[in-house]
Length: 461
Image (cartoon, helix red, strand yellow):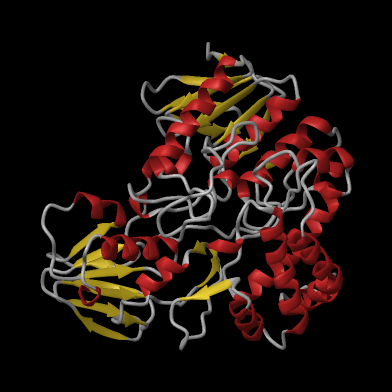
């Protein structure tokens, strides 16, 4: 006989989305949940992250709704003085350990770590090989649909010749001997983190070659803060820029002028808009790297040479190629979150997946009909290109209007720090907040209309 797991829900994936959903669901409904994950503990990709990574946004925006990540303090020293704290990977893993303990002791949650979900209610331990099954009627929650690929568990997407030194970014902190040259491969947050870490540890900028297939737009971290006046002001700036924009490139240049967007090289027009946050002190460091290669993607790494789509670059014989080229975010097609086979977790509010997963958990706990749940929580895609970014903001706004029209959801959303747009009960008015709201009233409608056009959504609006 195969032992049966007594659960109303089976959450597949114990990363940020799975944990946020489970927390909100069990906090608002009397149900039992089994959480299964192939890794040895909860925390998802953070368990395999490079050791010097930090959240790119404020800690308060991350984690689960019931438990604040960090202390909510504003930094009072260092290059990010005045900005909210950002958790390290060690702090994030410890936080999820505490959340797991609270869930398990509530007697509502069972965590099945180091286990694989095989489908059809079947689970197998990756350690013992023993099998379990969930009881009939248990609802499956897919928290892996958008799980990121990271360099630690993704092979380099190029050929590596014998004798070439290629290492994932995780290995930088484990080096025992410095090479004469570092070749950093990638255009996104992981590559920028690697470059910043090397420079902060005394590596000469001339000893770094940065292979950047695309240049990215990034959000200025100073305006993505858990302060209603700051965040609302940023949204107003986006709408004002959109209302006046003549093209996508013009939109992003206007956002750059407004202090919302950053680009590393102002002589190059970026084509990538995944838009993680970046601080201006990091930007200053990144701009010291002058050897930037824009010859497409790498095809082959050889000792002393890198072959790319559009050319070849000579490197030092002992160069260390730092692999930061995993795809990271995924872009599968959007599907209704509540489907016949599973609840498929996806972002709902732009750029804040933990809030979206917690919102889905709250709605699952408080609504009955799947059609109504899908109406309240349409998914929003991650952005990759500038067009994607415009569309993402429109779809995220539509989602916000849908769930925000429900009084109980609005009250709940304003009570959790995961919601970047929240205005807590009793929050005092200020000149800055009043000005932001006034500008939103002025530019909101024309800004959204223009974003619909720029994002290719005007016909579907």
